[in-house]
Image (cartoon, rainbow, N blue to C red; front, top):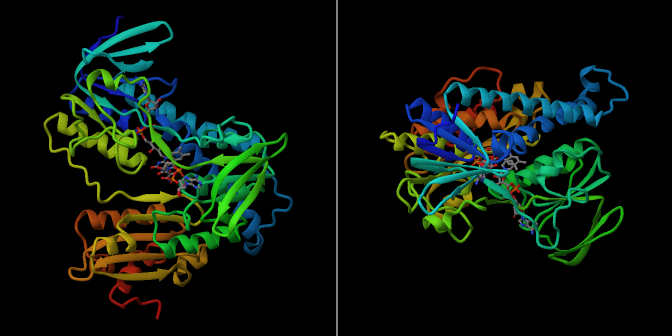
Length: 468
Ligand code: FAD
Ligand code: NAD
């Protein structure tokens, strides 16, 4: 049967932004088409990002914990070793399962999927090209969710063998002896941890004076010290300036505060950020201009400068995070369908899935000072939390920032086991305009790691119960 080519809504790109937009459109009764150039739905997040990296982090964390802590728990596991092919197979099975899940959801909602590269024509229609076949689609509303791509350093082009992007670093077939990671952000720390746990000598080189630069200094400093104990090396305030690829290693020139130096490694992972992806989208044909960072500017309802064309996710300004793309998708489609379409860009959690994890929401001390906001801080160490001590998680701390005048929570940062889950409670309190006292007086089950968050909220007014 010939496919319909006229819709209420066309979504270009089937990442977490695009496929969620298509699902919400179908739920709201819009006839919806989803265009995807890759063979699988799910975008960066499912295929080469969030999901495969978390699968690798979980497998390697299991190995690391048994190796380093098993004996003291009476677990005798002599001669533990890693079968890398099996570890990668597990990762692939996780990704496959979720790919099937996304396809199932999209099909069950009656969304028509068009596999091919979507491009705007001058008439505002979208052509979908796959090999020699071309289909022209039209709709009243077109949503761009084309995501992002890895950033390459000009003097270090990716070859997948010695110079790796995250796409390569999640699929190596041999454990490298040494890995130099350029960039101490989310990818550098997560994938650096994965390979370090498997025995690779990992050095993280960061341009700024701190790793995990979006977090407060105390969090970054303690995280770095903990990762160092796990075996990672760091060179901060360091800029890689050149490279030479030899047969078995890469030699890199660098500038540091103390002068020039050299690094050598079997492989190099370049993790210096991602850039919006708008190639061959034909934006110039409909008159959409990009901002100075290649992003599509949008208003608070995700409308571009062209009527009927919207954009969400990594291709637009804001943090490049899957949950940001998803929430924008829902808000955008709801506003297309005549609903409020609310999205709160002030309260987006951010997590780095290392061990321990690092999580934040709202503003930190640096931003509060920049914005001249008077604040109070409460901190609580996991070393004083019963559940943390009972489960090898007694490192790190939770920190609550509250307005000095109103006590309203301005931000929360957590360095600790399951910080990614703990931060959810802070998000909810902040979403409802909660105060540090609200969080402090909420009953938390004992013994849980979440009690550290409650104690940090109590500490805002000097009332922590389990620390002095
Ligand atoms: P994408 O997921 O990039 O999807 C865009 C889709 O559009 C792609 O499938 C692409 O093929 C398709 N497309 C592009 N142009 C066209 C076209 N013209 N025609 C048809 N199709 C097109 N974020 C988190 O929140 N948590 C994490 O733990 C996390 N981990 C990550 C780990 C790694 C290694 C990486 C690389 C990223 C990670 N991210 C994480 C970031 C997250 O993947 C992105 O923020 C998220 O995928 C953005 O979603 P999106 O829908 O905007 O774009
Ligand atoms: P990032 O922006 O998180 O970190 C890049 C780091 O590289 C920064 O600290 C930056 O100062 C440093 N840097 C930039 N140029 C450099 C240079 N020439 N030399 C040395 N250091 C340099 O980017 P990323 O880690 O590549 O991740 C890409 C995107 O994917 C991010 O937007 C991130 O939010 C997203 N992501 C999120 C998660 C997560 O949510 N857990 C995980 C992975 C990726």
